[in-house]
Structures are given as structure tokens and as C-alpha cells.
Amino acid sequence: MVKGEQEFRRFMRKILPDAVKNAARQAMEEAAERIAQHMRQMVPKDEGALLASIGWTWGKPPEGAMAIGEVRSSERGLRVVIYAGNNTTMVTNKRGIKFQNALIQEFGTKGRKANPFFYPVYRSQRRAAKSLITRRINKAIKVLNDG
Picture (cartoon, rainbow, N blue to C red):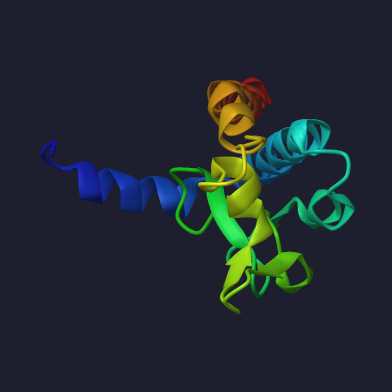
């Protein structure tokens, strides 16, 4: 940890204008939606309920969803969670045990081949999402300095 880092962060939180925070929020929303769209393209087409369940939200995912990825900002409280699955995508095996279909599709089972749609997209898009957020924040700061 760098000496004075906590004080600097507190100072920046106080003076950081709403325009910069809004730029970060909008960029995070845009990045999360791009990732979710790519995941919807990769999910097996015969899995309509699973396809419809892929999305993103601020904070916690919906009940029954599997949060497998997130986009965070260094600004406290800004956290977008990308998720797949919900209560309608739960499946039951022959023994009566419930499983989330999103995980079964992503990783497969002993008798079922994996159809990864979440992690490959998330890993390939994560860097672009961070770059988008950084560019938008830097642009907002530059506008403040120029104005």
C-alpha cells in the first residue's frame, strides 16, 4: 500500500464530479449489455428459457440466478453483475436433485457435453469492458479540465 493512498481516495471521492460518476455508470451499463448480448448469441438455441434469463443488474442477481461475472469500478458501490439462469431454468435429475441449467450448459456433466457460453465470452470481453470504462472516465475528466 502506498503511503497516503487512503487519504487520496477519500479526497477524490469528495471532489469527483457527478459527470465522471455518470460516465462510469453509463460505460459499465454499455459494457455489461455488450457482454450479455454476446452470451445470448453463444447459448444453445434450443435453450429458450436460459437465453431469456441472461442479463445484468446493479448489485445482486435475481433469485436463483448464477452470477458468474461482474464489472467493477474502482469507485465504491459501482458493481454490475452479469448473470445467467433463474428459477425457471432449474432442472431436476432422476434422483430429484435440482441443478441450475446455466451451469450444466456451461460445464457439462458426466453424460452431457458442455456448451460453454458464459466464461468464453466473459473472458474475451472483460478487457474491452475495462478499456471502455477507462476511456469514458478519462474523457469526462478531460471535459472538466477543459471547461
